[in-house]
Amino acid sequence: MNAPTAAQHLLPTLAIRTMPAALVEALQARFGAQFSVAMAVREHHGRDESSFSVPPPAAVVFAESTADVADALKLASEHAVPVIPFGVGSSLEGHLLAVQGGISLDVSRMNAVLSINADDLTVTVQPGVTRKQLNESIKDTGLFFPIDPGADASIGGMCATRASGTNAVRYGTMRENVLALEVVTASGEVIHTGTRAKKSSAGYDLTRLMVGSEGTLGVITAATVKVYPLPEAISAAICSFPSIEAAVRTTIQVIQLGVPIARVELIDAHTVRMVNAHSKLGLREEPMLLMEFHGSPTGVKEQAELVQELASDHGGQAFEWASTPEERTRLWTARHNAYFAAVQSRPGCKVISTDTCVPISRLADCLLDSVTEADASGIPYFLVGHVGDGNFHFGYLIDPKQPAEREKAEQLNHALVSRALALEGTCTGEHGVGLHKMDFLVTETGAGAVAMMRAIKQALDPQNILNPGKIFKI
Image (cartoon, rainbow, N blue to C red):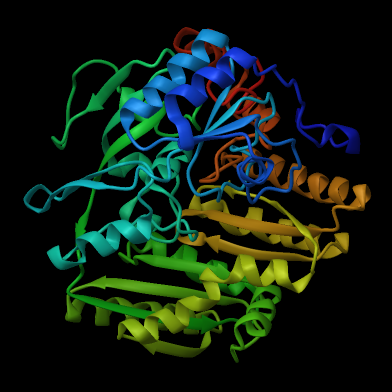
């Protein structure tokens, strides 16, 4: 494994580039009040949900149109200054951090729903539209956008990181749900990838190249995504288990039997305890599965009954069912508040998050050994997982003033990723590479594959101004 664990190597490499006065003057002249060098604005755009601390960008541009993005990139290109796209700041892997200085390009004001094509089940939006805003905009059509990474992330950011989340077991990830993009290149040229057609064999699949590129190949300024009819019936349930293994074995059996479950999430006992304290709930402090079923009333009933039977065989008990939106929201509070509940449980902590994903048949092997290691480490942690597709997350709660804790957490992450890769899994199921997983990417894909990625980056961004220092080092 290539990931170093010595404490001094666990922080990003900084190579700050100078911001020329001529560029500051040009940006001020072009953008006026949409341009800022105020420290408070820069600091807001210089942090995300990762554990890294990096100096803020030299300036911030608030883009309000594709033309704004294009002009900002043209000016940055003239001076070879980095540009880091910014949506809502919910990244977990340091994607938004200005490790080489430069301009934070905030697209949150580009938040218009451009078109709703209900007959074709597609919607086109600007990048600053959030998933909740999108669903609010289309609720009257009887459609919904299913990708739910937990945070109210922007669609542009979700495209950039190839996000997924709780519904991925049934509806897939952003990779399967983005049909077309409008992208501004490093030189400021506006290009279009894909169409609203369901399929195409026209040339290289540039849409898929951009989805997951983490802002290193272009800045997304519009996205056409799939939407789905709201299910006729939805039922949710929680079920407690005597052990994590029992919950995981139940999940594996549900998936292998082909039950079309929409969501199946794991929360360990530590996390249930944290959520109870944070949200004033009274959940049983045992490993728990949260499940949701979509379909016809008859189909949902049959699915739920089958899953309850399978869970009971593994010691599952304390089933609680919910069919109204209010009841479902209450049950899902535990999952959606898990991260914030964990952070609150240790004031002042930072979270070292993991994001491995393995084939469903290897989930128990990977997860249970990792739990044993985490328990033995003495580091407080929480565990949640989209276990229906083999993806799970440890969050190690470290004291940022104690380098030994960071090093121990990174060693746990190192061991976890090594285990996942040995089981033919991946170092990141949905968070992306960012700053945190660059060395793991080499181990997972091989030096040749990373060299190919680097060649694509250099061809499309020869001055290395698009979110430099992310995914791999150049």
